[in-house]
Image (cartoon, rainbow, N blue to C red; front, top):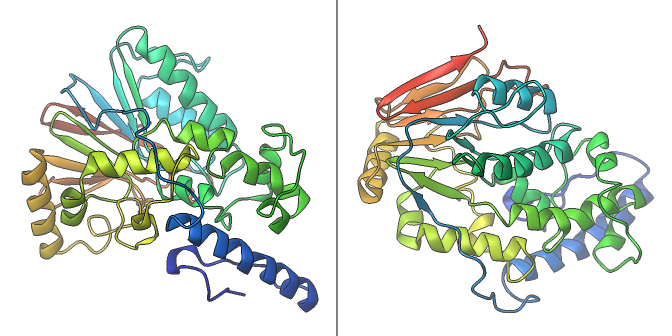
Length: 333
C-alpha cells in the first residue's frame, strides 16, 4: 500500500497484512510524514546555525581511488578497500597518502551497515596520520534514513542498531514505529548518534579537477552553490536546522541519474557546462548500478562507479583509480 500523501521520492510502503493493522499503521505514518514534511520546510525546526565548515575543494592528489555503493555489505567493503590498497587483512590503513572517496549509499539493502559506517570513521582517523584522506559522501540512502524513509532497511538492518541507542522514552515520532524499529529511528533521525556521524560528511567534494557526488551535479546545483548545499545537509543531519527542500526533488545531487542512465548528447552537453563552470575535467558518480562493471560516458567526462558489488546486487568489487589524467578500473581478476 502506498500513502499518497508522501513526496514522490519518499512514498511510504507497508506490507500486505490484516487490513485493520494496515489502516492503523498507515494513519500513524500519515501523522509522521506530516511532521517530517513540516520539518523539511522549516515549520518545526528553527533556523540553522552556521555549523562547522568542511571544505568543498581539496588540492590535487597523486593517487585517488573511488569506491561506489556498498549497501551494508561489510565483506564487499573490505574487498573494495583492499583492492584500492587502502587496508590490510586486519582492516588497518596501509594506504599512506592515498586519497580515498566513497560516493555514498553505505546504508540499506544489507545487514552490516553499522560496521561499514564505523570502519570508514576509523579509517578516516588512521589515514590522516600518514597524510592520507578518506572522503565518505552522503548518498540518497543516507539521507532517506535521516528522513526516516526506511523501506529499504532489511530486518537485519533494524536488528543491527539495537545496541547503538537505548530508547528510554517514546515521543510522537518513535510512536509511529514498532518497538524493534525504534533504535534505528533514534540513531538516524536528525541529531541522532549516527545522523551526527553522517553530518561530518560532504554531499559533493571536488579534488583537483575531479568532482565526486552520488547522483550528479546539475547546472542548478552550481547556481545554488555547492558549499551552501553541503552546509545545509550537515546542519540538518546534526539536528540543528531544517531539512533542505531540494533533498525531496528528483533531480537533487543524490537522486539524479542524468549522467548514469540512458545518457544522451544533451546530458553530455549539460555535463560539459557544469565541468567548465567548476573548473573540472570529470565527474565520478554512483547511484545507478552497473553490475557488468564500472562504465564511462561523454568521452570520459563521467565515470559511473556503482558496480553493484553488494550481495543485494551480486556484482564483483571494482574501484576507480585516478592518477592525474590516467584513469584505471581496478578489479580482483
